[in-house]
Amino acid sequence: MKNSKVSDCQMVDIRRYSDTRGYLSVVESGIDIPFDIKRIYYLYMVPEVARGAHAHKELQQLLIATSGSVDVIMDDGCEKKTFHLDKPWKGLLIPSGLWRDLEHFSGNAVLMCLASDGYNEHDYIRDY
Ligand code: T46
Image (cartoon, rainbow, N blue to C red; front, top):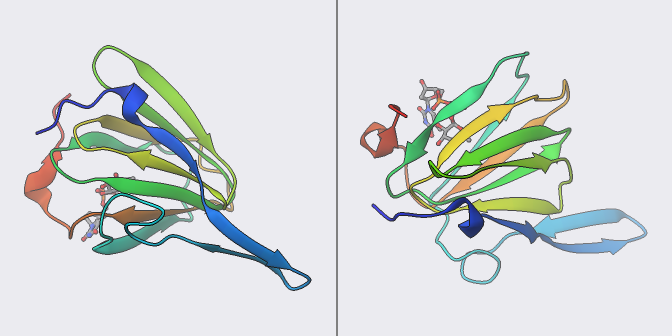
């Protein structure tokens, strides 16, 4: 497992194209993000609860609030930093090995996650 730091998390601008019909954003492996996308999932209709509360041994992810807003609190054991995601053209690139908590989902929030691998419960660290 990589020993990442909170400072290794990056807010990235998602490529976007606009014309009179509105905006289109795109994320391509190897161009916009440094990993191959193996899985996409999204969180929505989240009530007043916290989610997350785990780290991943190997998984890398890009999180995008495609609608609404959410706070992602990243924690490497020494430093904690809150990233407020509220724009569909901003993404939080998360390397492996970092604890994350997800809080304050707005009522209309849709949090899309692009992941470097398939779902694997053995990749989760749930004990802080
Ligand atoms: C993360 C944050 C941002 C699956 O069957 N396949 C999947 O790909 C995922 C992600 C989940 N599940 C099942 C496992 C659980 O029974 O969906 C249920 C809820 O998953 P979880 O409790 O892990 O959800 P969150 O919101 O706490 O965490 C998720 C991701 O698991 C995690 O990787 O970084 O979103």
